[in-house]
Image (tube, rainbow, N blue to C red; front, side, top):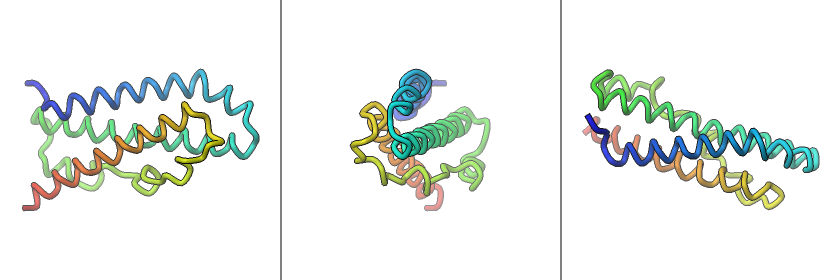
Length: 133
């Protein structure tokens, strides 16, 4: 059984961003943080965690949707509060997105992970509306 096109593209995009973020955080961010001042380094750490949170939330949601599509769980189960996309207060915060003291690589991950999280939030809202109506 093949997944819907929106799912495959979103899953692939999420996985690619996760790998890119892992590589950036493992090999680049640490050096950049060491060169930055204390306050910029702290913001970098916070924003790196925010990127990680967004990507983890999106991937967990996508895996639940895959389980629904494959008949492993019902739509109602997938829409239970503990299975829904969460962390909006952290994941939707863009307070440092335009902070030019942060490295370009991190800002790029921040922007793309935010757009992905927002898009998946919209998908979830559409699913909820479909089930409610």
